Amino acid sequence: MNIPHRPRRNRRTPAIRGLVRETLLTPADFIYPLFLHDGPKDEPIVSMPGCQRWSLEGLVREATAAWEEGVSAVVLFPAIPESQKTPGAEESYHAEGLVPRAIRALKSTLPGLAVITDVALDPYNSHGHDGLVQFDPAGQPRILNDDTVAVLCRQALCHAAAGADIVSPSDMMDGRVGAIREALDGEGYEDVAILSYTAKYASAFYGPFRGALDSAPKAGDKKTYQMDPANSREALREAALDVDEGADMLMVKPAGPYLDIITRLSDAFDLPIAAYQVSGEYLMIKSAAAAGWIDEKAIVLETLTGIKRAGASMILTYFARQAARWLD
Ligand code: PBG
Image (cartoon, rainbow, N blue to C red; front, side):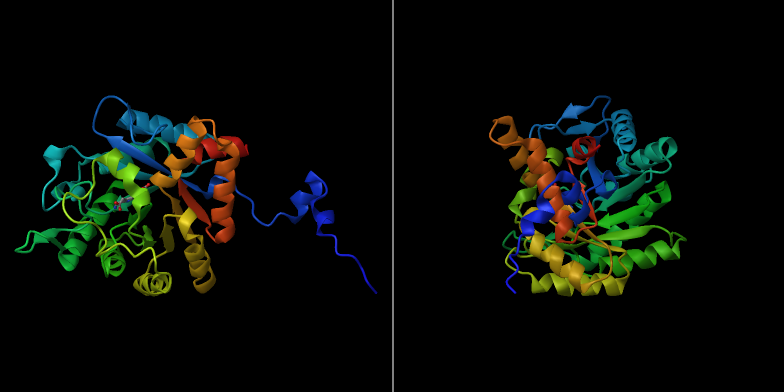
C-alpha cells in the first residue's frame, strides 16, 4: 500500500500546532541579569541599549516589575568604581559591599525571588582578570589558580551570608566548584546551590558586557582559563569535573553559537542545564531591530525557543522582562 506522507496535517491549525509543540517557553525559564552601581541614579549603559546600571532602589524596582511579570530569578553584576579595584580584589568579599547590600534589599522586598550572584574577581580586580594576576619578567600576566580559588570561596561565603540562593562561579579556575561547596558546607550554607559556568568560552560576544562594567582585562586575554570556541569534547570533561565537585546546575555560555554544546551536556548529564544569551547576542538583535531590519519580538522568542529546544532548562537573558511580557 502506498500511503502518502503528509506531515503538514500536524501543522494545519493553531490548535493542532499547539498539541504537537515540543518546546514551551515560559517566564519561569528566565534568569534576568541586572547591573548595579553604588550611585543615587539609574544610568543607561551605552554599550547595551535598553540596559541600565541600577541604583539599589532602581534594582529593587526593576526586580519587582520583572517578578510581577513572572520572572522569578535574577543574577547580579556590580560596577565597581576604579578606586575600589585592587590587585587582591578585596572588595569582592566585603560584607557591606554593593552585592551583599543588594541581596539583602532584594530579599527583604521579594523573599521568593531566586537571587543568584556571579562569583569572579574581574569587576573588583585592578587587572580586569577573573583571577589574581602575577606578571612574568616579560610583563605577561599569569593567573594564580589556587590563590584565586581561596578568594572565590570568601566571595561565595559573603554572598551566602547576605542571603544569596545560588552562587555562580564564572571564573573558569580549576577546582573552584569543589572548594566553594566545601566552604559553604563548612559554614552551614548547605542549602545554597552552585550554578557553575561549566563551559564558558573565550568569546568576543562578551565585549558589550565588559563595556558595561569597565571590566575588560588591562593586559593579556582570558584564553588561559576560558575555553577555546573550537572545542566541544573539552566541555564534557569540564562538566564531569563540575558534577564530581558538587555543582547543582551546569551552564553553557554564550548560548546561540554553542547550541551543540548545550545538547551534548544535556544528553550526557542529568543535572539541569543553563544557557547564557550574552551581551553580544543581545546587542546584535537590539541594533538590527533599532535599524528596522528585523522583527525584534519574533527574533527574540525564536532564539530563546531554540536555546531551550537544544536542551537548556533555564536561560540567562537581557530580554527576560520583554520576553515575559511577549509570552503573556
Ligand atoms: C565575568 C563575566 C563575564 C560575563 C559574565 N560574567 C565577562 C567575561 O568573562 O569577560 C559576560 C556576560 C555577557 O557578555 O553578557 N566573570
